[in-house]
Length: 407
Image (cartoon, rainbow, N blue to C red; front, side, top):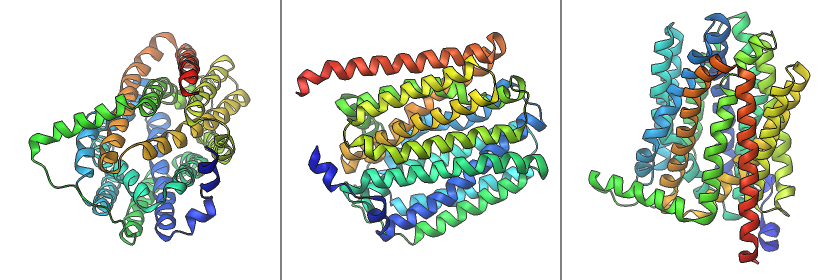
């Protein structure tokens, strides 16, 4: 415990690794563009097309469905393909797909574009996890994952407010064009990074499902990984039911605009930045599994606060706490996954986890719109808060039950 803490690299030390620094810069630009485009689509459909809760939820469903069902297959090939070529090709194709949003004007076309976009992303996400494991030393994994998370968080601070304002002033196309350029920039940066990994021999198509089973078997039989997977999958179910309809909550319960929707999402990013800066300090004294549980509990409290008081100040406070808790979950779970998974299986395990996360979110998205239309958004939020807090309590009980065996 103390040796690992003592040998952990700092942010500055991992950024002195050229490959890490380039990957970090590519992540900053690309993720910022993604947030800009995503919030532009949601804001456009919500405030310009006056979409219903179900229609808005279907935007994310169309993105999550391929991740749920296609990711495990993609992960098998990521473990065998050239990592850099996979990431660069994925960026270029996704840039072209986002560009096509400029020319479409119907919800059905948006659904199709997001569906295909997710199929391509199913290759990029596990490939990036493999790239991080390849270019970063073991002692620097927590710092590198925190840096990648900060790129995500910084984008979430700036992009939503900017996106909401741009949609209101000049329309969503400006956001789509920037995201297209960000994908091409990311592809160019990735081409300069040396990523050397031994590639497993090509297998027959019939062995793809055998490889998938191997990944799932490891994920659910490894004590630490299975704990993280189950907690995250059920937690994401509750969180997605909340987040999918935040724009409608802002419009109908707070009586506000797309700009306010953007600001609230920005506050989630602020909370995540604070959480990320705190996690290395907490991580020296608290096991990573505990940090996941505490993150889920904090997110439950955040949703409860938002549902209980339909005011802008309490909603803003809820978004800050939500982001703080999310940082604990995202960084610790990714680090645990990379530390505990054998290199030759990381693509499969990462994509299988991504599949489970997406599947739980798809179910939540299918239910969120119709349930909110039937019982109201506030009652849906109360249910999400109860689920998150319940998962936190169950996780805490499981950890306590394992302490005697560990000691």
